[in-house]
Length: 254
Figure 1 (cartoon, rainbow, N blue to C red):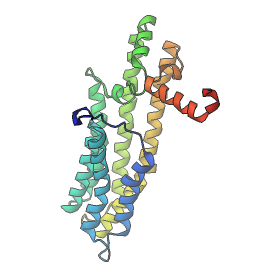
Figure 2 (cartoon, helix red, strand yellow):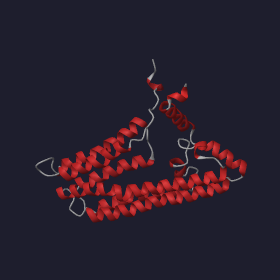
Figure 3 (tube, rainbow, N blue to C red):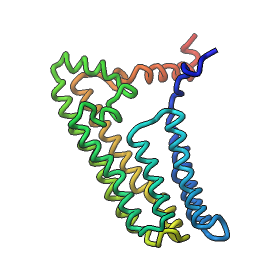
């Protein structure tokens, strides 16, 4: 029997459609359609609607040990939204909160460039995605370490800029959509609309910018080391890719 202390943390597999459904769609529908007195009421709809992203975030943290700065900040953000609604604060505080969360992350990215552990390494240039040891060895052999570090620093600045974009857009959208007093049915409905609108107007452009930053980083690695993407992928990703190819082409295994 395996002792509880040896139980490994299960691998976290990205589930974007589940994330979208639980964190965006369900809360928005509850807030927009069930806030009336004939359904859940303002307070219950707010609590139940926000319980979905909050519960999902806590599940991710506990189940997969995703105890990182951004995940915790996301949970705090959901909690603050609930607090603003329950305490019936001025809607401008919601806009400030919406802008503050990505602004704090962007500031943290900038500050981390002055430390031994820049966040861009943790999020984009890390062993779970790339074979960083192999890349670093090649950079040392070619005498390109300093040039790569300069490029990595630029990537950090670009990365911070994506959060500045999110911060500004969050504030503008919150001030544009949420205008009713907190604690009312209209506030809940507007909060639901803001949640739906923010995904295509903020999340998708931010993801595209992050993909471009990763491409910039990858092009730098390609130019300085001469490796292809497949040659510098993390070993466990290559192993998964090979297994997938074998399962899709049983003839090749014979």
